[in-house]
Length: 622
Image 1 (cartoon, rainbow, N blue to C red):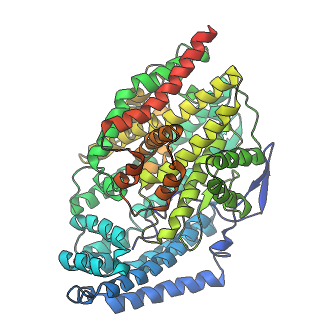
Image 2 (image 1 turned 90 degrees about the horizontal axis):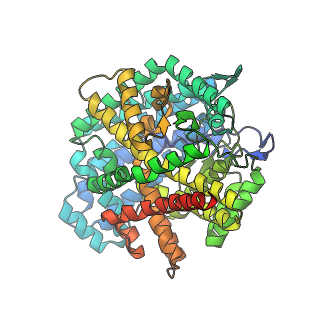
Image 3 (image 1 turned 90 degrees about the vertical axis):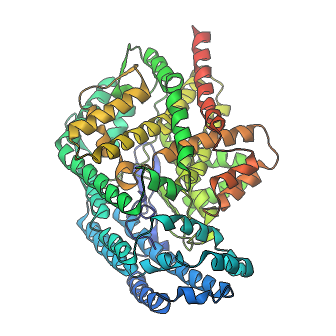
C-alpha cells in the first residue's frame, strides 16, 4: 500500500476548483477543472465518510488477514481464496487513491493558501497513519512459498489474473525489510521526504520575481525567456537568479537532506547504485538505461552542439547567453494561439491517427478535466494525474498561448488518453512505469507536430516549426540526460558529506556545458537554476524517462511512417496494457528491442534528421 506522499500521488498534478472558466487576454476562455467527480469539496459529507471508511476498512482488513496469508494457499488449492484477498486489497487501493488524489489536486491549486496547506497536511498524516496498518500485506505476500503460489496461479484463473502484479511485487522482495522497520519507514514518510517535498512546493509557489518593477510568480517569469526582446529575457533571467540566490541556502538544505534520506533508505534496502531503486520501480534494467545515457551523451556534438551553434547565427550572435537558449527565431510569429484553436489543432491531429484517440481526448475538454490558466500559488509546469480507475485523469497546464503550450497540451492529453485506456487493468495494474508512461504523451506531441508541419508550405514558417520541434526534442532528450548526469553526481558526492550551494552549482554548470556545447555561455546566476527543477525533489532520477520515451516514440513513429499494417491497433493494445507487461513485451509486436544500442541510435537519428533538414534549408537560402 503506497503512502499519500508516494510519487504516484505526488505527480505534480494540480489544482482546486474555483470559477467555471477563466478568461486570459487573447486566449479566450480557459477552463478550470471540476473536481466534483472525486469530491464536492474538502468539507463534503462524502469526503468525511470515505475517510472514516478508509480507517475502518483498513482495520478490518488487517484483523482479517494479518498473519494468516500462508494458510490460504492450502497446499496449492487456495488460489481463489488468495485472489479474493488481493481483490479486497485492490478495493482499498482505489479508496485510498481517490482520497489521496483529491488531497493532492486540491492542494496544488494554490499551495500558498493556508486552508489548503492544512488540509493537505492533515489528510496526508491521517492516510499515512491508516495505511501503516496495511504494510504487512505485501511483506507477508512476498513470504508465501514460491512453488505453492505458482501452482495456485496455474489452477486458479482468478489468481492468474493478478500474475503481473505478483511478479512485480516479487521483484521488490530482495529489498524489503523486517515488518516493523517497513512500518517505521512508512509512518515517518510524512515527516521525512514528504515534509521536505511540501516545503519545496510551498517555497517555490510563494517566490516573487521582480521584472521591470512588476512582481511575478515563477511561470510568468519563465515565460519571459520565450520573448523576442533580448533585454526582457535577460531581465527575467536576472530576476530568477536573484530570487533563487536569496533562497539558495534553503534549496541546498532540502537537496542535501533528501539525498541523505534516500541514501539511508538505499543502504538499508541493499541498493548499490544511486539510481537502482528508480530502475526497479521503472521495471527497466540498469544496463538498458546506461545504453540510453551513453548513446545520448555521445550524440551531444551532432545534436545540441550543432543546433545551438546554428541558432546563434540565426540570432546574429557569436555566442548565445543562457537566456537565449529558448528564444524565438527572428521571423517567428509570436501571436498567441487561442485556446479553442489549440483544442482544434490537437484533436484534429489525434483524429488523423485514430478517431478513438480524439474521442477520448475530447472528453477532457467537454467534461472539464483540464485546468489551464496561470494563477497565483498554482503549481508550475504541466502534468496529467491518473487519479484512480473508478474515476478519471485530470490534466493541468499553465497555458499562455505559445506554440510550445499547444505542444504541451498535446503531450499531457497523450498521458490522459493512456491513463483512460489503462484504467481497465484496475488499481493494482493500471499504473505504468515512468519509462513507458512517457510513450503516449510524446507520441501525441509528435502527431500534433507532424500535422502542423504537413499543413505548412511556406519555407520560413516551416523552418520555425522545425526549429521549435528540435528544441523541444533537445529539451526532452539531451537536457533530461544532462539532468540525470547532474543528479547522479549530486547523490554520489553527497555520500561523502554535505554539499555546499557552490559545489552543487559547479556540478550543474559542468553538466550543462557538456550537454549544450560552446555556443552557449552561462552567465552569473545560472549556477542556481538547478534549484527550481521539481523532479529532483519529488522523484529522483525520474528525468531519464523523458529521454527513454522520446527515443522510443521516434522509433515507434518510424514504424508508423512505414505504414506498418495494424499499427494503430497494436499501439492501442500497448496503452491498454498499463503496467501488466515489461517493456520488452510491449515493443516486441513492433519489432523493437530497447536492449539493442541501435534502438537508441535510431531514435536519436530522427532528431539528427530534423537538424540536417534545417542545415539544408539554411544552405539553400544562402
